[in-house]
Length: 325
Image 1: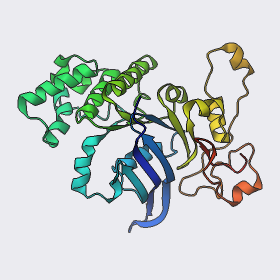
Image 2: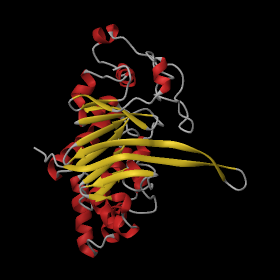
Image 3: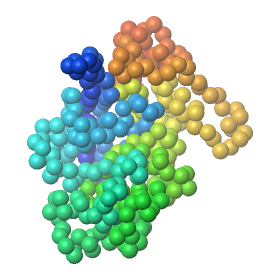
């Protein structure tokens, strides 16, 4: 059983990007990509973060790792507040947290060999040199189920699934505690997706890893995650244990997302009631007043436009932000 000690705590994290206009690049607005999210991830847990494209999932992951400096809020890794660290202190801290990127075709340098790609973090942090580095690279390739003989090849010689395994090997090279998986399978064929997910699960069991798993594929998140948070337009609208969320979704947006997931049984699929959302996602530059989902919500009331619903614990471990729950 994994230790339930909290490894990562995110407190009211905000990341706004300025909208610039004109010759003098005046700030005329803010893109509210992440607008006050809070959650914890326990050591050894897989925490799913889901939502449709543009909701702020990837920005949240990169801001947690301080690849983007947050506008406000706190990110605690253990007892350390990452937002207060100097550049050098954050560089040392990065050994404990790594990222697997979405696009295996863009995240590997085409001019570097596989050996150079995986060895780069080892050499930057001064962990190994020379023959020890070569041996470590061979071990990492074997760990992600690739031949150690691939070390001399270049990324263009591999399939998408193999490239993503190389990305996983690079992320594992520093023995991190936390890995942010930013939609690591969305660019892969369905048959390859299951292999990569199984690899991630095996690595977690063998190495005691903790994952923040960002995705829009709800069925895959259900398979791999222990708890799931649902994002919409920069905020978290629901958070619960994975079984509780899928069996008893409370927020209308979560209900709409789950109603769109196909069921393999044609009899059940024929009797299911689909919840169709109308309209487009509002702009994060100018989100709606009150509840951000109200412009597309089928049960919205006048109250929803007046005040933003509190993100509250409706039942033990099940949080939601809706006036009508």
